[in-house]
Structure formats: structure tokens, C-alpha cells
Image (tube, rainbow, N blue to C red; front, top):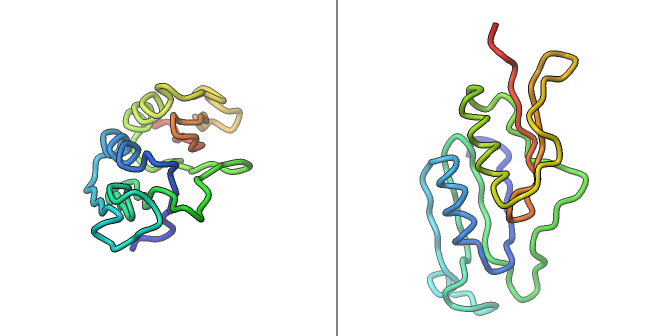
Length: 133
């Protein structure tokens, strides 16, 4: 493990969400369904555990019968300086597709560029970079 890795519980669309995030961030994706894990608290084909490994790492599953699906308030997943400006701009645009931009990528008074959005899965992102001189 490289550090803090968010573990998201999706409302039945984890496979779709993970494929979407892999399409944006790249990386290696592993998915295991409930049947493979011997879980019986949801449909056999629901994702019981998934992991995206790469520059951006995410883990998660489809919420089980006694779990709540992820709801984000008062927080963002921050990708400040995680990659070069072009890559971060592409990620911002891809995550914003079918989502909602809260604040577009904008140069801030302190010189950094950042913006925030809620993606199509309800995940809130803060993305930005320090422009190269």
C-alpha cells in the first residue's frame, strides 16, 4: 500500500464505476464478485471487492444489504499536483462529464490552478496544479 486509499461502497454500480475510473486514470483493475468471495448479502454478480492500482488508487465494492452507499459532503478527494497540468486538466474534464462542475479550473490569487466537481457517481474531486514557470 502506498498510503491512504479511499474505500467506496457503491449502490450496485461498482463495476461500471471502476471501469470508468480506470478509463480516466489508467492503472491495474481487479474485481471480485460476491460469489467469488462467498458473500450472500447481495446479488452473486455484485462486486464484493475492487481495487484500482496506479497513480490514483481506489478500492471499494457494491454496498451490501446492511451497508450505506457512499455519500460525500464536506470533503473532496484531492488530486492537487498528482500529475502534470495537461493530465490533470484531462482528468478534470473526464470526471466532470455527466457530473457537475462546482468550480472550473481557475488560477487562484496565490498562483495555483484548481477546480472542483462532483462526478457522475457522486464523488467530489479537487483537482489542481502549480503552473510551470
